[in-house]
Amino acid sequence: MIAKIGKPGHKTRGVLNYLFGPGRANEHTDPHLVASWDGFAPDPGRDPDATLAQLATALDLRVKQAGHKAPKSHVWHCSIRAAPEDRHLTDDEWATIARRVLNATGIAPAGDPDACRWVAVRHADDHIHIVATKVRGDLRPPRNWNDFLCADKELVAIEKEYGLRQVPRGDRTAAKRPTRAEQEKARRTGNARTSREHLRTIVRTAVSAATTTEEFFLIVEGAGAHVDVQYFPSGDVRGYKVALDGDTNAQGEPVWFSGSTLAPDLSYPKITERLAPAAVGLALPPETTAWGRLAQAVDRMPDHLASGGDEEGQAHITVLAEALDALPMVVPAGIRPQLGQAAAAFERAGRSRIRTEHQQAHAIRRAVKAILREPAPKDGALLAITLDALLLAVIAAQHWHLTRAHHQQAEAAKQAAVHIRAAYQTAATDPLTALQHQGKTLPQWQLHQQAALIRRTLPDLAEQILTEPGWPALAATLNDAAKPGRSAARLLAEAARHRELDTATNLSEVLTWRLNRLRAPEAGKSSPRKAAAPIQPSSATTPPAPPTTSRPRSR
Image 1 (tube, rainbow, N blue to C red):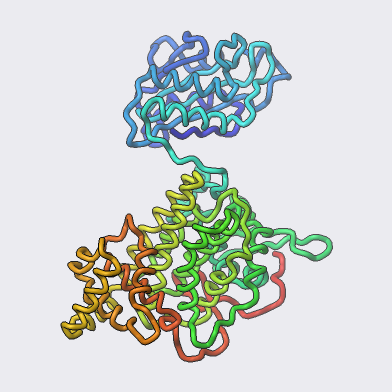
Image 2: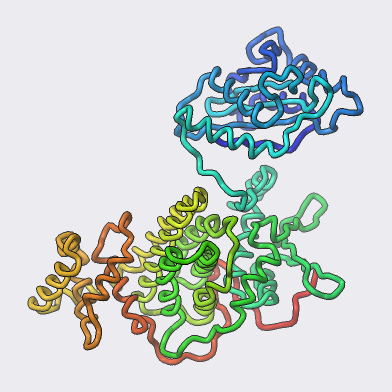
């Protein structure tokens, strides 16, 4: 169950008009009271002699008695909605739920004769609305501080007692949702996303690409947004706000959003923390490409999450979100939509209330920014290896959040894994086909040799692996891994240790790419490259990073 408590209003009759009306799309059916403060409130929905004016007058009685002492915004409005898969609750059950929530929030404590007046209105199967006037019988205001948290805590208990879906609770680190006005504006203008959501994507992508705050501001501007940078008298940056090009209010002025209103981790101080350590050290060893370095760094992430402290784990999950934000700019068009959806889903998983030690994730952050400054790999195997590593890291992040009761973040990571797996399957098709052909051309004695290795190293999984269509590709990979001074059995055991046990549908494919990754740095070798080139992202995301310039000017 989810409770939503709106800002206090000042028109009791106006709220009642909506609750007993047809709704914005004629979605209201049979509006009626399920409960009230004394059980005798007039019900315009079921009593033909009752009117909305009578109900509003009864609710406002104490407000009028309080006179100038009554709060101007005296209307408390709370909606409570069940999950779509929950059974339809009866009116009596909804009445009990309403009373429990009112007691928990302090609006109408149980047994208090001076509690605020209230009604619970039902006009749909899956939710009710509670309307109360915030003046008690003794003409004092109610003590309803932290009413949302109190209501939410009570709903957790109600879900368990009534056998309803236990909704994952957040930790108040989620990005602010678009308002109804923003959503309606987006529909009117024919946009699939609101300006807030569009700007959030632009800013997150810019953070993943930039190496300095100056470059961050320029990338945002280049992506079709206005930037207004605020300064302290000393000249230091105090903060920033952004507006989408063409998005104006009724007066024709840009609609501005500060970074912190887009998401808690997009405030200027948070961004400077993330950019400071990554501003240097982008150069990689000449024998390893940035993509190879990224695959290696991401491959170590599950171990960091399993063995490191909470602050280090949060740092790696934060930078994992940055990697997913960056990838749609440089991957082939065929997998760009899936990775864009993965980044959007994982955005929620990138934040928690755990303090982040950003210096713990230097290597992967440098690799993320480096892949934006060199061409995408022509070798499809390297892309598949990278995506496989990302998939395992996201699954590890899901487990990390679950063990800390971060339910919303864990669900977000789970959804991101679905999209990454789809991108991986697409990217792996061609290189896997080539490996399959290579494996089928191996002499029979070599195939038997590799099969024996599988049976010795992975006895519990051997029969499944040897009967899968991907077995020839794995055999070819094992054959290549069997070089002097290197143990193929050790690499195989290591690859199996990192296998995603619950979601791998083709073990041979999973092991093939993990073996290739563990054979690094061979998988990431290339000829020495020139200095990092400017970012050249795809037209579907952020435009190219601008050249180095002075500090962006405030608009």
